[in-house]
Image (cartoon, rainbow, N blue to C red; front, side, top):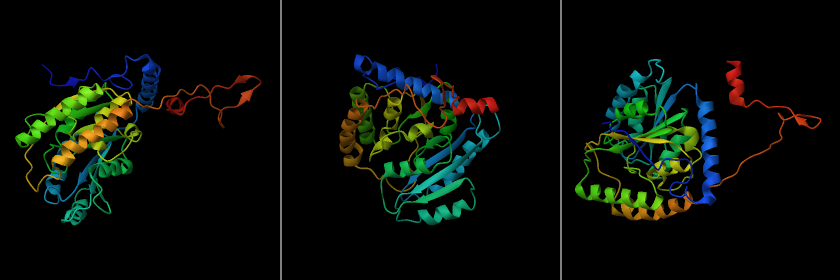
Length: 312
């Protein structure tokens, strides 16, 4: 039996509200707009930007870069579902150890590495958003820097992507202490119940999604925990893939009871509000420099993506 999981709640529009008539038009429009983006993206070379927030993870970075290279380099073989290339963006979120100097040393070894240093500890959400905005690729992958995520799982997510818009990992055989596992299990249940979704592991950082969609998402402190629900809000088709979870070999966790559970509940209320307040509109006519008129009949305008296909 396949271990891949397609979420039955992954339909276009605000999840858990699609049965309400007042949302039906907006849901259809969200699906139509996303379908157009998929069509324009077909044939575009796939370049993957791996975004890695890091705070005091100097000891983990050499092994992390080595594992990412071993995982992604074979995908750059020119195959039909391969990568045209990749980059690794490590965001130093105000580290007080030698993370910055280690990034400088690693950049001389790994040409794919791009380091970014934030002025002060801004938090994982801010670091993630900064990395996404700086990315050059049309696809974004995210990983934690503490080596608990296995970069080899990015290949599993990438291979599961055809037919879907984004891939989310869910951790098998969690290596955290029992209290964190219990908190995570209940947090997933409460979130899914409130949002009407069935995302198995909202706290898993192993994800792949289109950069263009990520740039449309609302951003706030804590958004890194809700990327899956917010992608669903945009009408994405998601596939959930089991991934490995490993013991943390260096340092200690940056999260405690407040920022892992109580703060998440506050954020969840805000996300539930966002899910129910999407901006919905349909453009039926525009006039710009490409829209000339002759008499009363408008001249047909060929969309840019269609013009590119015709030229090719």
